[in-house]
Length: 93
Length: 93
Image 1 (cartoon, each protein chain N blue to C red):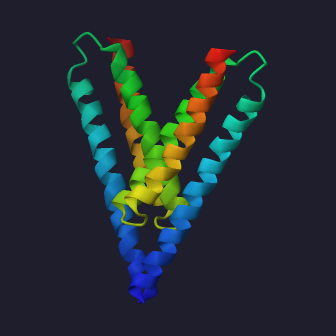
Image 2 (image 1 turned 180 degrees about the vertical axis):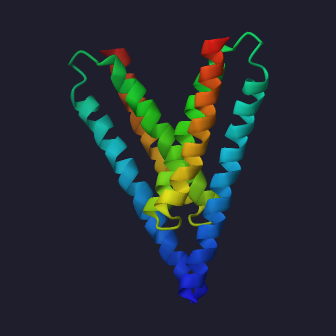
């Protein structure tokens, strides 16, 4: 029973993290689609702040024992890969 | 049984938040004690970042239903009051 309740909390934690990651993902996608447009300098700042916020949430969930470290950190790594694409694109432009 | 497990998680969440707040509190205290010293410009930046990180953790814990909104937000408000003292002190200096 106890383990079941914690698992449910873990699932909820994971869903919330995915939800927040999705918002960042969308921000990155929009920027990837608009690489030919003049880049807003605040864009990078906003993305950095959002990524930092998400990393705090992920660490917190890991410390609480609600999510598996590797699985949770992967959410961040996937976003970092997308961000790298964005930076690459900006340099090539 | 189920509620009991969630309560335990809530206590753990609250303890972790207090722990993180304590680190920020110490940073502020050190700076309050050294108001006569030349202020390091990075200090404010570091405190801002830490406060933002803590606010993300607090929101996450609230969204998970692990902590009471008012009680958790009070952790942040107490730190903000301390920070205000610090700013006041810097202005008077």
